[in-house]
Length: 255
Length: 281
Image: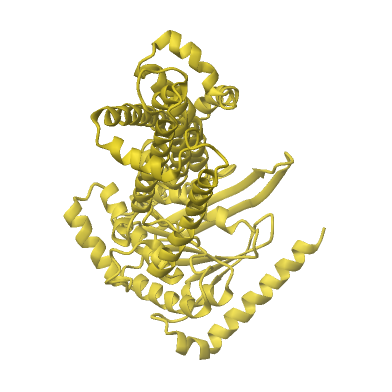
């Protein structure tokens, strides 16, 4: 794709976001909703800019990010590990497949009250919930990616002298990377949602907690600030993952 | 190249061992049955026996579905025969090994590695130190005519170039036997001709044993010392034709040579016969 096409694509992508902001601005300018309940975007963004400089707000962001990264990392390590093992070994697959089928459709948020009782109100319960929710898309896409590796790639490596037990790491894992990264992308979006949700339900800090506190005291502007923050964080993290993806997949045909 | 005697009498009489060319590959009464989804047994290869001498260029020719690729996979050690045994240098084949290097129609290059990385893979697996493996690989890449493309990824290359990389990757670990599974089948006619010429030039240098699967009669006659014609499923050997054309072969001269034309016509007739056989219930 050339630079001009890329620029026009970015511009096209900005249009709906600008429209949404315009509608938001319109609703509050034309008085459809009182400013105290629905503050205009300008007010929210200037509040955000002001908040970003304060150490308390930075602390809230840091807590949320820490939980998000810890949970997501655990999900990546476990998802890729279990997914590869299941693809490589029929025995592991026989053990993993039923439990995945039972647990994957379960709304993991339903486990949260139990996690709170077991692990307390701190980081542990939230990290566990994020990991549990992000795990399945990563595990499943790793499993399918590793199962679909072209047989002749494996044969080529074996003929070149690669022992059977090294094939998993020398051929199957690198060949499954495109599929694994697709799973990670879904897992990352889920992580953003779930960490916020967990903090809303029960927490003493973090962006979700900020939102709930502001809502309970009718601080409409402060309610929208964490909301905008988490979507900006999601945008940045997705961009970083996309960068990592185009680096790791530089040899693979475009998908 | 050290060749293990396949029969004890070679050991007993060294003069005899120098006589006939020693067998590189022996395929001894090999049959292959596949289980299809409907639990039916499908006989792909039936009672194949074939001996290939060291340094011979042998093509296997037959209609699609005659099991010619399966035979190649058995020699490669990728598939175990249901019955019979295949040997390389007198030892029964139990799995893939660097003495038999495959080149596939689908290229099967590692997409996450550059041209250089792909070619270096084999030597590195064989324990060759990195600088030495790199120097060897660069020479091979130059030999297959891809100097300057060392740092390209396979996706940035044309089909013909990819197949050159695949050939270099296989030659890099010095297999005694090249197993080529319709290697030029996915290429356009022009590229195909050029690669055939280049393959012959490379082969003339070190005369590796080559087992070459194809469905093109011209290609088989042009390249080979021997053409093995197979029948439609179940695959059997219909006939083995010795191609007694002088080497080095030049395409332009060969096309005008009546002996070449005779071989092509003779083998094409034979294949037409096998196709009709296949149509009979």
